[in-house]
Amino acid sequence: MSDTQLHHPPFLRGLSFRLLVLTMFFVMLAEFLIWTPSIARFRKVYLEESLARAHLSMLAVEGMPEGNVNKSLEEALLQHTDAYGIILNRPDRRMLMLSKDMPPKVDLMVDMHIDSFVGFIRDAFETLVQNKNRVLRVIGPSPKDTQVTVEVLIDEKTMRAAMLDYSRRIFNLSIVISLFTATLVYFSLHWLMVRPMRTITDSMARFREAPEDETHIIDLSMRTDEIGVAQRELAVMQDELRGALQQKTRLAALGTAVAKINHDLRNTLATAVLASDRLALVEDPEVKVTMPRLMNAIDRAVNLCSQTLNFVSDAKLQPQTERFLLSALVQEAGTTVASYGKGGETTQWENTVDAGIELTADREMLFRVLTNLGQNALEAGAGWVRISAETDAQWISIDVCDDGPGLALKARENLFQPFAGTSRDGGTGLGLVIVRDIARAHGGDVVLAEDETGLGGAVFRIRLPYAEG
Image (cartoon, rainbow, N blue to C red; front, top):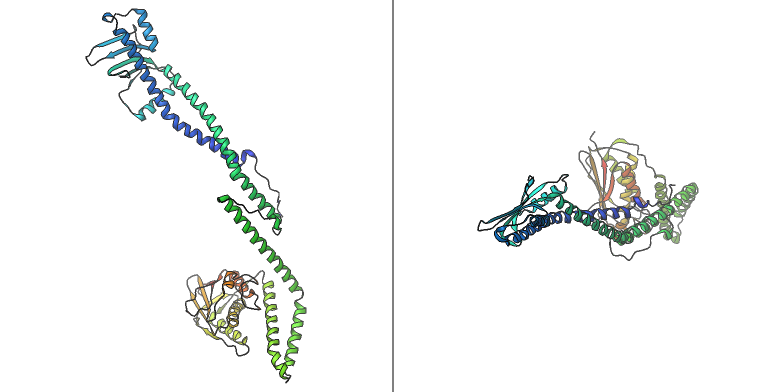
């Protein structure tokens, strides 16, 4: 037997840790998607503020007589705006300029009149990946007066440093949010999913160790979600499987017991048959009345023992195939079934199988299949049984239909189950089990088909591999 001790995966390989990592990943992904437009807007606002500071500085210059600005004031204004130079353009074409003696070479011109969301994002990433400083010429309307256009020369490194500082704050905040969210999700999922799943796996491990122990069945859950459904279905499956195993254990014990008493049982039945034959010769009226019931009881006992022994001995069927005419076998089976009739019981056996159909199978086993189905129809009270066959390139379908009362609901629900697939008093249900086992041993199957005759009887369809000779 395999090791039944259940080993739960370690934390780093468990479902909880994977959910924790996935939660952090998705939170960080969401934060990145939020940060992308945010950093682009941060850059745009930074440039707009530079234009606004430049405009305010130029207002101070405009207030002086004839725009005469001393050197110290000029340097103070440029230092305040972090700019190399400022140009102010008004609608009346009056232009004022405040600049250092030798402004540096402009590396990139930024036109704030162009309002493009994708462009702002692209420019923001371009700024972040720069390794060297660039001098920017920023042109745009003044946030203080849209009628005024301001030009300013600034270093990009100052803006880049501010953008990196903003990104670090966003990243640190994202880490805190992701850890907090992941922790909540971890404990929630651990309580709602991981613990119930471990309960299910523990129950399965205990059930595997001793499936016939009723205490190893999982407790029913009151949850209404998918986990609750899974737990209840597992409990139902374990209960049904436990019952099936108990039944198979009893059947195995029965088979062993019957096999051991086979010889004595046959001798006992032979003695009973011999005694009943002698009693049949007695002219006593009471004996005449009792004998049919006695003979029927003995016949049922013989039939029960025969089917039980066949079921036990056919645990591993190995067909001995040969080529034969199916129609001849059907006719032979019909003759045998007719001999089963007692007390005036007769069944018309209608053989409609094409006389030229040849089948490669175990002839004796297929004979048992046909006689079992025919005997079932006879005992159910059928007046006629019809056998038909249809073939194609790979399969042959043999239909055995009758005009009896059909199968009861109980028999249909437990069809092909030993000692359960019959509703007839004294029946064992082994006949159909043997029929199915023989069909499957040949690579085919047998099913209960739809009644197309309209008479309400049973129609069993035997499907076997077929190849034309």
